[in-house]
Every structure is written in C-alpha cells, then in structure tokens.
Length: 373
Image (cartoon, rainbow, N blue to C red; front, side, top):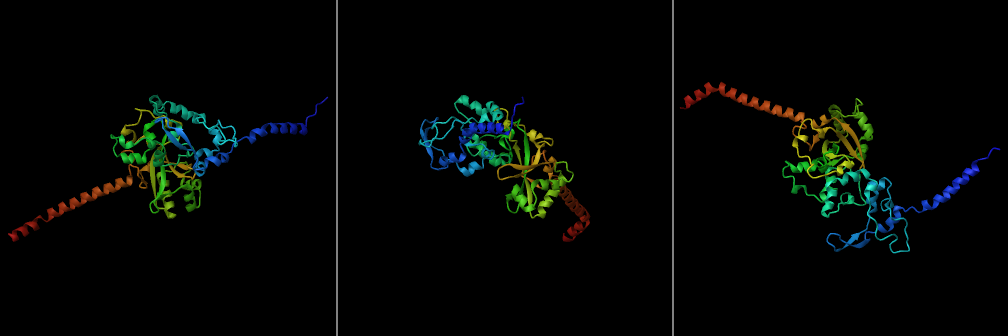
C-alpha cells in the first residue's frame, strides 16, 4: 500500500517549526531599544579609575547619528552582537540589563587582526601593566570606514591619540612633509601592503571632489568616467590617458591638481607594529624603482567612507598635475626637468652673448679710453 504524503502534512511541519522559532525571533533586541536610554546625553555611571584608583563619572551616551554612520551599523551589526551578555531587557528594573557587562572581545569577529595584534608592541605593553585594547585606538561605537580617509584623518583618529611624532624622528629630514603625506604604519608595519592615493583637489574652490560631487558635475558616475578615460581598456590609466582626464575635468570648469598620499592597506597586518622593525632606510622610498610606488590609484570617497578607485600607471607621478608628493629619485617631473634645462641653456646663451659683445667691442672701448685720456 502506497503511503500518502501531501501539502497538508508539509504545511503542518512548517507551522510547527514557525511556532518553535517565534519566541527566538521575538526576543531579538533592536538597536532602537538600547538607544531609548543610551541616546540620552546625560546618561552616566560612576566608576573607579583602574590606574589612579579615583572615582570618575563615565558617559554612557551613544550619538545615534554618528553610530548610524559607523562601519558596524552599515554592515548590520547590532548592539547585542557585541554586548552578547545582554540576552533580554527587563524594564521593571532601574537598569534593564546587568549593570556590569563583560568587555567586548573584538577578536571574536576580527580573528586575523587579533592574531596580528598579539605579536605587536601594543600587546606587549601589558607586561608593563598598561592594557591596550582595540577600542583605545579605534573607539567604541563610531568606528568608520578608513579606506578613503586622508593621512591626517587616519593618524588623528588612531596614532596621535598617544604618540607625538615630533618627540622622536630627529633623524628624519623634512619631518612635517613625511607626517602630512605618509601614514605612520607604512614605515612602522613594514609588511603591510601600501599604495598611493590620488585625490582631485580643485584649486579655485580649495576643496576635494568626492564621488557624489564629481558625478553631479560630470553627469556620469565613476565607472563611466574611467571607461571613457581608459581608451585602451587595460584597466590602468597611463600618462596620456591621465592628461585626457585632466582635460575632461577642465572642460567642466574644474581646476584640478591631484593630491598624493602614501597610505597603508586596510588589512590586519597593519596591527603588527613592533620596536626595531620600522623602516629607516631612505633609499627604500627614495629610489626610482621603489616598491612603495608599485600601487597607485585615483580615488573618490563616498559619504560612508568607502571609495571608488582605479589603477594608475606609476609614471603618472612624474606629471605636472600631481602635487604635494615628490620623492627625490623616486619620481621625476619631466616638465620641470625640461624647464630646468631651458633655464640652463638660456643662462649659457646670455653669458655667451655677453662675452661675445665684450670681445667685439674691444677696439671701440680702447678708442674711447684714448680719447678720454
């Protein structure tokens, strides 16, 4: 006898599963519930400072607008994904969850970064009684996408919280230029991948062009612009195509110069900073075949911190339109070489003409001297 199976039995099983899962779905805690309290700027708690052993008032406020722009919120990470020991909220209590929560363990998600951090000087500081945590550098609730951030933004939000580079680096020539255009970890984490970011800066409005502003002016998006410029379709902007890009921008009343910065890739190995491993060999950068120039890209930043990028031939660094970035022996601006050569030739011509005129006028000058005497 054939056993009957059909839609009614399948539907019954689905209903049973739905009933079992319903309590779990209903127990999820939304970010909005947390922000009902933590969205209050006056929300604080009293605690004891673990270094000075004094009473301090700690703010528990979370700025909702800033949190919404954070990389975690954009990626759908909720409050209780990090604060996993909050399983439910009890509004009958003054504080609807446990007052003392466990420390957030970032390495639960960022495993690779956690491994690289373990063998860093920041982790080794714990042997001296100083506890460095991930959020000491990256912050708590407002971690941003840093791919499109400038060197200044990266350093101000991370390294310069603790370090004053001017107290060290006495050996380094032109320190200000290095600090402004080269990210710290480029030298202090030598194994990190690095690249040169080129950003359009308008000389008239004194401002950078991001993706939305550029699309509004040109009437096309980034991908369309790059396909238009990349005539040979090799996915690399060569110097002649770069000149065409500049011409296209000028036709749209943009007066561009490309600001160049040497930055580290956003990767876990950037946490592998240790004493004695920093790059101090000038020739590593200051040479025509420097590996630091292998990756060059033009970038346009989005509001959320992500970027549109397109690979550029390193020879573009030799063009007139790349500014704030000149490494002796590593890049040579050919136009400036030509101008310098013309100045030398012109000076030689002036000197030669002067000597020729002096020689030709010797008889006349002797005659004048005789008449005068």
